[in-house]
Amino acid sequence: MQLTGIHHLTAVSADAPGNLAFYTQVLGLRLVKKTVNQDDVSAYHLFYADGKASPGSDLTFFDWPVDRERRGTHSIARTGLRVPGKHALVWWADHLSKAGVAHGGVVERDGRATLDFEDPEGQRLSLVDDGGKGETHPWAKSPVPAEHQIRGLGPITISVPDLKPTDLVLTRVTNMRKVREYPHPDNAKDPVHVYQMGEGGAAAELHVAVQPDLPPAQPGAGSAHHVAFRVSDDAYDAWAARLAEMRIPNSGKVDRFYFRSLYFREPNGILFEIATDGPGFATDEPMEKLGESLSLPPFLEHRRAEIEKNLKPLVK
Image (cartoon, rainbow, N blue to C red):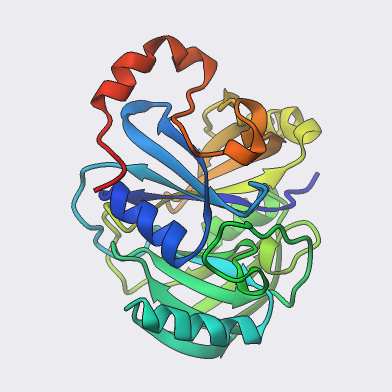
């Protein structure tokens, strides 16, 4: 029973209009679902993805009025976004510079060309050469040329002070495979351990940085809330049973309407989600209209007027 890759990464923003402008106009991603946090309907939940809203391509945000995060360990530290080659990274370095976005230039890391930068709220991102492997679904209306568009998520880097308990969960519970390590770019004495899911590759890796000298992170705007891993729809029940049988404290089955989820925390406190590929974002609106209006799951539809009244506009 295998996880097949990264499903989505959910982060925190305190500026929904600015977030929307940056991720659609600068990064060229498609807003594929404009909805609310199902546990806090006062907050938007915005989903950005590729042209077909493919599983494994969505970067999502909760819009909460919070202060900036304090960086540290016990956290998701960096989100990888895949592009199809070093030529794309050269284009992106120039594009980000023209957009006024500071970046670290194209460097080699863990055998891949990589470009580090941050969004306006300090969310740490990296564009990573994935070798052009796998399917690609460009968005026709993106301001980024199709040949340079972001293809999906991965790798995701988490920071922990102690590897052993996290390694135990990754290898014994989630069946990931530890395949290599490399020195952390900020401090070469801190190793980064690479774990693979499924067939591996940039779309199916979790990188675990061991940083015992850092203070615990404090969440806020610019932080990542949780990382989700992909499972096939027919494997979901088996994963729920596995967590229960292994006595892993977890959420139990949660139906998010667009996918089904299981949540649990690894021993260093980082929130993991296991999420199904389906039903998908075109469940309640046509593919060509995704993200154009507020979507609510059926169990919230009767509160639409109240919810819409309390949401702030997405355009400044």
